Image (cartoon, rainbow, N blue to C red):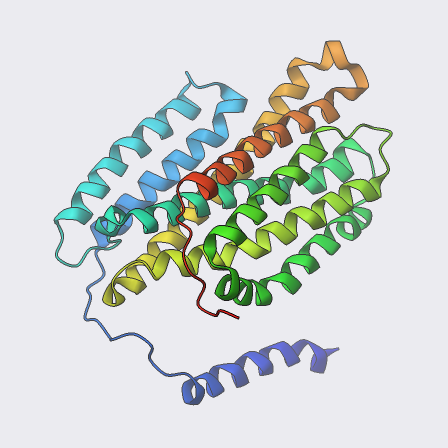
Length: 303
């Protein structure tokens, strides 16, 4: 048992040593100082907004628990943006959002992560809290979806090279919309495998969009700004994912509580249906962006 527990540590150590010899610097090294003020502002801004949104469904918008963090987060966010635009070497370079295509990729990634993290939290709740199955069954239901994302992600880059961003974006967003609409119509009598299949379909669409959106967005900025573009996009979509986790669980809780008298034992499943309906709205926004805001570009590899 002791030897087995040490194997992952040995593997990580070996990977660390090998990486020093295998990997090379892709971008030019930049001399940057760590801006403590910007770091603190980012924590207060993004943390306050995330906490405030998460508390809305529990305490209401007009409350200290939700309103105060939201106001503080929003105000500090303004100061954060102003500071970044005024610094010669900003903590997060907000000025690259002036690039239209990059801004579209950031917004799209945020919406995608909002829906993705919401569904990843909602699925175990559906299996365990709504349907009453064990944590083991919950893991078995969500496992195929995770495997689907793992299998699709390596091929997403090839699809992007061959098809271009618009086709893969439209297809992925449409599949995401269909899978979330399917969850809206689940009932207590629906077999569990139906939700598992819909989860696989949803994860296939998510896996096919994550890296292409990141790649497409970062290729639209000048080369020396690629590191800033990647960091900014990763930061914003992570924040959106955190908000999504709190938002959709809150919607499910609020709807199920308010409809308990009318729906009885079906109140929880009704709350879940409404939460996925809002996720479908997010997927619909993605589909609209893919159709109207993304230009049809030539793929990198033509046959």
